[in-house]
Image (spheres, one colour):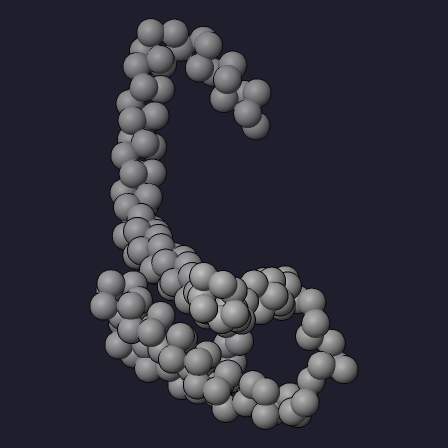
Length: 160
């Protein structure tokens, strides 16, 4: 009967996912996501709490990385941790910029502190060096007086 075409084998019906794949690609590009396509509220679609937890975990991970790399000490880590919890930093980039700024300021303070120390030590030294310079000038002037007495008198008279 099969040979006589009385019994015909039907083809298996396919349910293609091609259209679904195309739709998904378009959605990734931002199509078909307007207000008319949305069923739930903003909070139902992407809860604020989930966003908050993601941000906190990301910022804390970054802080931990900086602390382990010895980029920040435990005190600065704690201050920044609390600042993150207080919603002071909105993103990883924001936090990284703040850390760089803090480190830069500390380095400047350290340099100025070192410079202050060198300046303090130098303030005592210039008195000694100026005395030695005066002594050396007097000795050189004394030599000049011995060699050329007339020229040194002219110089002293012009200075007055």
